[in-house]
Image (cartoon, rainbow, N blue to C red; front, side, top):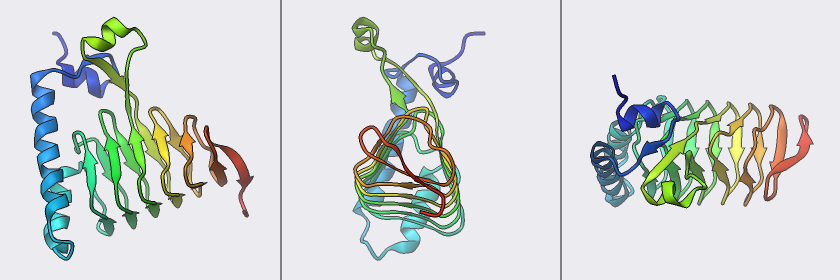
Length: 187
């Protein structure tokens, strides 16, 4: 039995992002994000209900500032005591999982999608995705970009403006482009 393009996407295999079913799912999610972003700021209960419709799994205590945008939503899991500042972008073609006590600065992006280097394949709409995993007790500074396939350990601080291209171990501070370890536990 042949896999659907969605199954290929979720299995981190090359898939056609132009597939009609995937397009339909993206449109549905983006319309929910648009609705979320256009709610009055003080409509906290409505905002919480919408995020529960958008996201795959949420803890009880979390807050996402507006605006927020993602591709599918169902691939995103957030733990307890999660906070994201303005302009959070999550391209969740693969799983994006946030642990407990994660704090994200403004203008941050989490990008699971990758495109083939071969232009002919890329131009036909094919891509693939790798998951992003964020541990517990992580602080991500403003303007940080985290690329596909990256796992961030527990008790980590990522300096503002960093581009994280490789896994980050527990108990350290990373910063820079590309991000590199600057300090270990006890910083």
